[in-house]
Length: 69
Image (cartoon, rainbow, N blue to C red; front, side, top):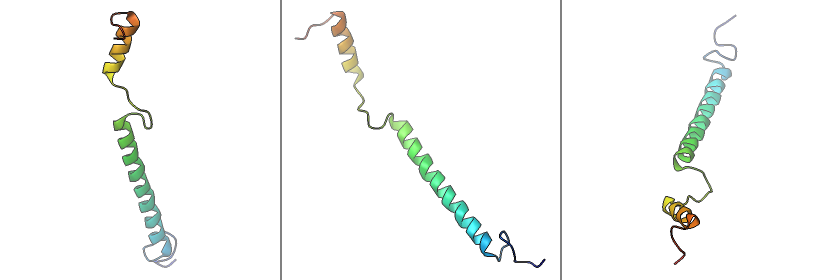
């Protein structure tokens, strides 16, 4: 068997193709990881976050501590 033949040999097409597939998968993993990091650091996507102050006011109003006015 000679050198340079086969899918994983340096002079064969397979070596370049394997590297290209590896780097495409690595690039996709980096992009997906960055998207996950951004989404996890900002909280839930698509849901408006409420102020905790409004929550406190609603609770006090429900208990009757404050009135609408």
